[in-house]
Length: 88
Image 1 (cartoon, rainbow, N blue to C red):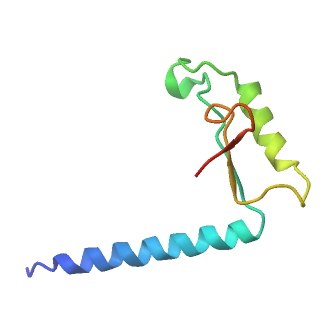
Image 2 (cartoon, helix red, strand yellow):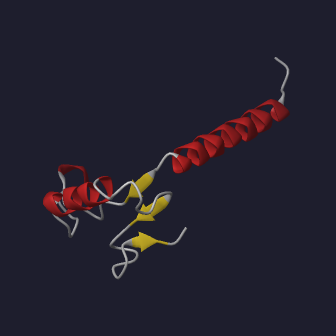
């Protein structure tokens, strides 16, 4: 079987470009990304410091912002507690 290492490299670049295009399109359509914080769940054996209710409140807060509100942002109270908007 012939080895073609360049094949994987080009596939990766193409996939990354498609991903970037998708994110750019979603940002123009009002994308909001939310970090629910380190939440105590079964997934982490309840080691998180936040509650599920707190995490849900963060998601609902971002989802219910007015259409004129910030878009293309990453919201994280853990990373930026004063504004809730995390720098990229």
